[in-house]
Length: 210
Image (cartoon, rainbow, N blue to C red; front, side, top):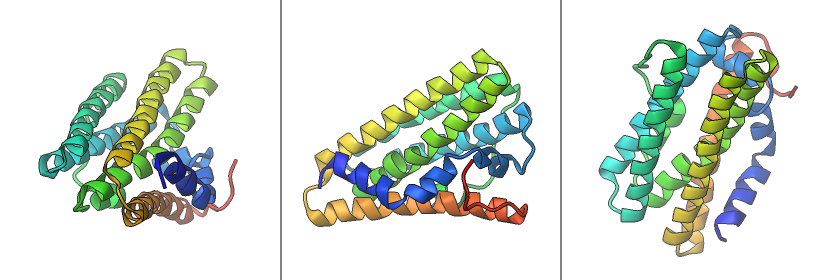
């Protein structure tokens, strides 16, 4: 296996979950059905804050130079994302809990698992989330808001490519690639479970896309 095959496999094996995460119901789940700009931005800001904290934590314990450099670069990028979203929001929310996905990522104990979870699994979800926020601003005829999240989405695409490149450099055996695949897929599954649970609690069927 190589990096392109890894991405193709993860997306194929988790197509239903990723399609649902990329549906218009994503914002309903994210905001508990309060689709106001302030509520959306608050939720996104919390996500960016947690991402920054996660990548800083991963960088601080990583021994592999290539993985550590990637984590440090993405931590800086997520810090910038947080600042830009907070500027738009006019507040700086700081969540006091990591949640299932970030909790899982911070517990990985080797470079391959850390990179696969944080820089493949997570961004596969995040690019779809950004697409939905872009759609919100397009519907509001707010080009500045849409452009902000187009920038964040492009950066997240870059994060994914960075993660795949690092995996190509550090995965040496079939077992390495299998561990990477399993970790990335589990990160996607955790994100989907949170999404599905949120919708189910509101009486909304998560198993359809729109």
